[in-house]
Image 1 (cartoon, rainbow, N blue to C red):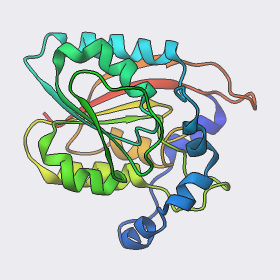
Image 2 (cartoon, helix red, strand yellow; image 1 turned 180 degrees about the horizontal axis):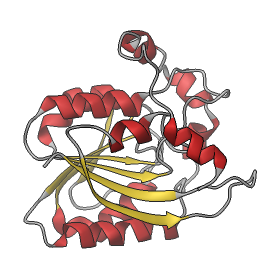
Image 3 (cartoon, rainbow, N blue to C red; image 1 turned 45 degrees about the vertical axis):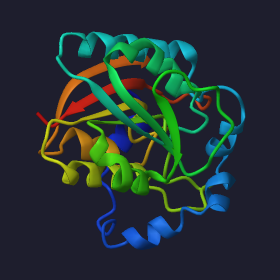
Image 4 (cartoon, rainbow, N blue to C red; image 1 turned 90 degrees about the vertical axis):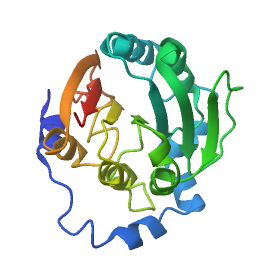
Length: 228
């Protein structure tokens, strides 16, 4: 890992984040979300992560769950245009009971197959309305935050994971694909998930570790957390 990535993964979430919850969620307007470059790129018919990276993640997931007598009922947040969703789904669909993609914006997306569907909700509403129907929360390359280009206050990944873990005491999984807490997701999420007392990291695989455009280390990984 490099200096920027190392430092981001040492950071905590803001001290006042829970007391700022309502204000943060109110900032997730359609205009603010679409003003963010990473989100606006979901209008293109392609995934943010490369197909090669996603296919590697899918194969690792297939291996991780193949020996488990577990049917995955997936709730995906920040699904964007759902191109990444389909790559992952197509590799593990034999283990999937249901799959609901969600996002605050209803982007154009490929035609869904089998038991995939889309619901238009931001991350917190998705967990509130659909979380109890699932046992797996999936997050693929969510927008990074903080970021000077962002007009909203971010942290949808944090509030969604927090709520999901408080919602049900049965065995549940959180799957994250990307550079956790750095170029993907909110700063502080790496430390939050990897040190959470309810979570065990049952699978972690490197997917891509090429330098970014600035020459800094960039590590796209698969993380699978379990409450068991």
